[in-house]
Image (cartoon, rainbow, N blue to C red; front, side, top):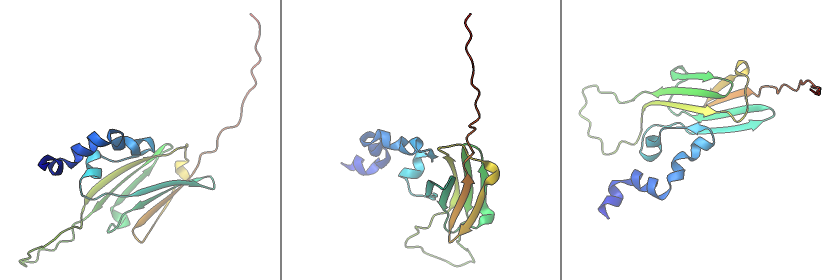
Length: 150
């Protein structure tokens, strides 16, 4: 029984092996260890509305200057850094609990349809980064091909 508490990630893998890869099916990737161990992460919503793709990422405690965002036709990449807010001014602090996390994150979000990177717009409000990208217009041009007998 002691091992059940000692290996929570291994236990989860054995109980739900497909669960480790469920986000990959939806195009949202994140390292396995980020989901199973506490730490800094960005929760992401991906949706489609009025011919546009929207990605909303929670980035509490991060300023827009610390975010690096790239949009491609099939995905976006997001990396950010949350700096530690501990100030050591010679004070002798004895923490009872520290739950606030900090560090670097990287996310790749695959789009379900092709997007137009040139149309990308991003805004940041109350710790939420919203990215809006127009879907690429599908080329409806076609050519009728006649078949000849050989």
